[in-house]
Length: 461
Image (tube, rainbow, N blue to C red; front, side):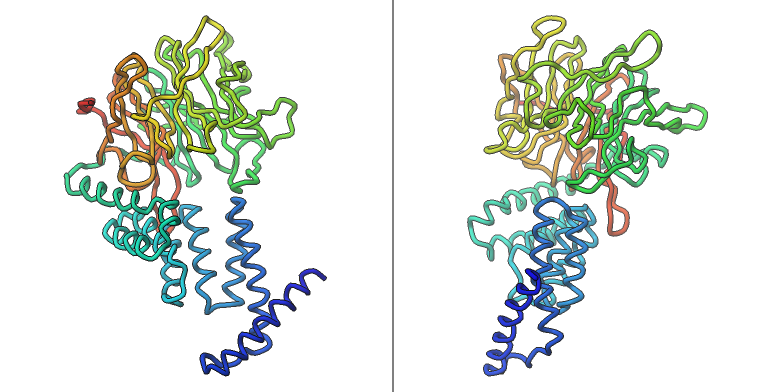
């Protein structure tokens, strides 16, 4: 009954609008069928927006597609379809539908479409087109909204990316094979000291419980293990059947000790039915027994480390006494920041301290990696000027809580898309990281190996 009343109200509005349009000779009178379709379309559009805001992108996409069928001449359905595809990292489709929206009505279309076009072109590596669309967005959008969307920052990213392209830097990373990269998202590769064993995280369809996260509607994370096969020159024996470390929720392998006998995980089982639920993402530890098995994950019992917010991506110095991790506990004012905490004794940690503004920004910092000696910190950020999205940076520990200005690793590692989970293995002369693999109009997050043979730490200041 409620839906019928909604349709009736919108129908009366559209009928009145259509009649006045005839008097002004702007357009012919809508048919009854068109009026009903447009009424239903408006209701479905609002429902799609609600789902989109809630992060239920795939459900929202279904609604917007139905809206497009009922009201094919409106710019709004393709605009929102484009937003959905952008959120799903389907940048080719996002570009197509954004351009469709502009072509339907370039005069009335929301000017935010040009910010959407700009960042979509940027992800596709078409920096000049991205730059011109960001400039148009800056010109047409209200100042407050342009500031909210950081359009000026995105223009600076375009300039930086163009400088990197013109510098002649060549990517020195190689995508791992299909044995590891499945077409679902893979990231967070952690190597053993000899480089013969790898743990990584994936959201493929055989994760434990094989259930999807109700928020983003993708499969939950699981930890996978693989072994290097010298004869075949591939990673094989890939499996998530690893003792007791995977749950039905989010499980991510974050740090492996040098001797391979202890590790740190990031776990979020908020949505599972188990008794021991986390309040968010928390840091856990596991140990390798003399029976050749990993123990059940044990949450670090420190209220300052594991808060009620997101806490994860831990990385340790070789001696195990200093840990860096990510938290969004200041989420009302900032995005994610990197914290450091020291061990008080063998079993207890102290109180974390947020790193200085030479590392952290009001935007996002994530996936830190500290070198064994504690001197250099690699991390990803979209707050420092980079090529686009998250770039990998490095900062030097100057002592006394001071860190050098973050330096972008440049075009041999970074791309115009998110580059995260960087881990450097100097003895192996390689690094591992996660980046986007663009295939046609879609993309997925994949694991890459970086040749670090000629790497030298940049001069910092």
